[in-house]
Amino acid sequence: MKARSQKIIVTNEARVLRALRLEHGLSMKKAGELAGVSDSLIAHTETGRLNPPKGPNLERLLRVYGESRRRAFMSGSEHTGRSRRRRRADGAG
Image (cartoon, rainbow, N blue to C red):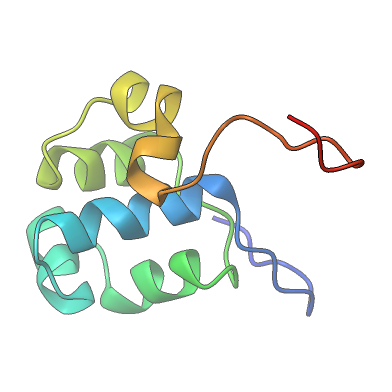
């Protein structure tokens, strides 16, 4: 996993992973132990300091959270509390 530049960007994937962890009542340390990754990887991912995990690390985290990749990221707004519907710039709709 590559580190980002100095710019911090919290991605939608990071928001979903954080929401899933919190829904399961897991600390970063406990989630890391269960998934076989470091708690710092989880912290840096959730805060936008690292790109979201891919491949085996992502699969292990999702397994700990009881989610499939498709379910976790296809309906991300359920986990982040954000609506998928965008508001129009003029405030209507």
